[in-house]
Length: 178
View 1 (cartoon, rainbow, N blue to C red):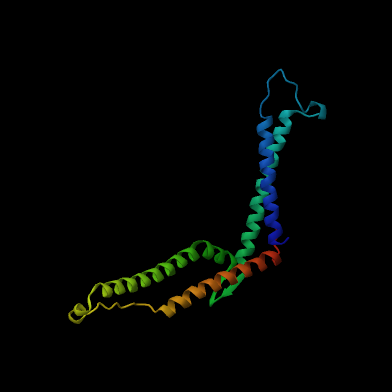
View 2: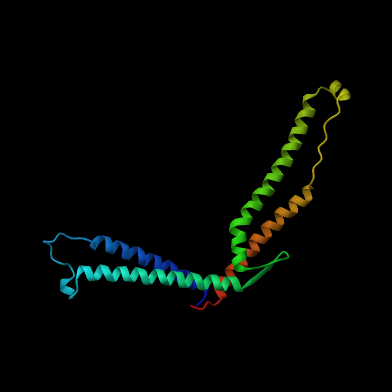
């Protein structure tokens, strides 16, 4: 079974669990004087509720088994991007945990650099021409280059795009063992 098929099955299991829960809630109790609605099917409401609970238990076990098989396969399959070689599981963690932090850092660096430039320009505009002869403008030392920052942003975007493509291919083609 392919990972994409397993993921579809998991969604189906979740829908079935939801349906079984609704059934249980509808049939959990009834007034004593009411006739058992399942009597005509040669069973009882109690037996149907118990069967629905067992069905939920089985479906939950299936979800765990499918997720475990996917995780196991993701730990074994490797992807190399931009000099980084990690398992699919590690890349998924990287995308969820590291990527947003890296994106935020690079954005903050760009904003801070732009803010410093705007601040310096505003100070210089505030002096009259005769004041500029007396006062030396403050120069800022920027400890990273704009070129490096731009390259890092482009590299991050390229990794993200390539990673999404690689993960889609792997999900569509990788077999898992249940």
